[in-house]
Image 1 (cartoon, rainbow, N blue to C red):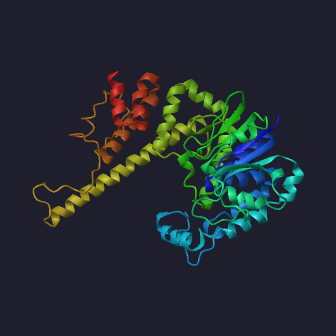
Image 2 (cartoon, one colour):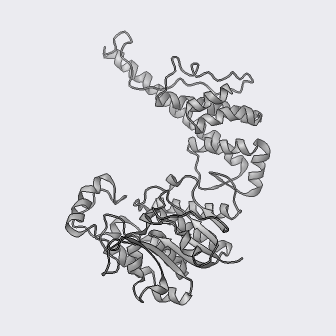
Image 3 (cartoon, rainbow, N blue to C red):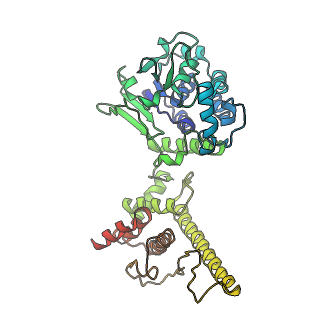
Length: 425
């Protein structure tokens, strides 16, 4: 396999996704002709150029907010540095110290990245940062940096606003993501047009140019970037999920796994498409997500459909419990004499629960019939989704056509009005 140029976008804690992607590429025997990154992507790029996966895992095992900062007092929230509850402390540090002291984070980077080893590997490594004094972007390769300054420039590339300066002492830098968060152009200028891009953020930067022309590019990105969580949410369990997602998405990008939002081996995916068709399968994945079916595993065809059914039944049980709670509240009110001739409403808006039936009779959907005096509210909307899920699963058992399934699946992943428009058509 010919080597690729590797582009790693910035995104803070979401960078764990890129480590999962690297593990998949190691399994597949992918090699790199050059590496370029911004912010956490630059740090991950150095770890990858170094070629020591265990050392990279050690780095990410230390990636917690409390380990990377130095503050005079404890944070209100250790899960996310820039959470609302921490803002007063951060603002105080910006005034007092030019930003939160991240010298412990710099030490963790220095402990896990050996500049001499990276230089000896002779894999071109580039990063992007932004020079605040000159108000200009800086795109720099390792061979352009003075020896011994790689960690300084990595910290400069990852200096998010609100953090103090840990970069080269003679210049003030800020996170390179403000200019180009996914720096394809850095390698394309060097004539490297066979690229892998691992994108973890919707933010691209004011200078980003999505130049896909005349290039062989594999683009790896979560189906929903929001699944990666917040950029400063350094949580071990969340990082493990990010790595798993990166691993599976990379296998999918290289054609070893299939699916849009979920993951299947080729044979199992073929079973599902043969049975339901591609369009309906996409909608089934949307249904699974809406019902909270676990994403980060490889499903067989049977296990996937069964997981949807189980999740739906669990949701129905929750609704029954809510209805029961509503009835108990009514009884309590009556007993205490607080309910006046039925005028006072319960605070709960539980939907009417319709039992699952395998009856062959299938009425057309009428929004008024799903709840007397149907109104668009969160609880009513949820009931609508459950009603459609019930009908959809019943039709799945009868293996009805894509056209018949489509309107109901659409309700799971689109606003209620979209369904009505589709039904009218």
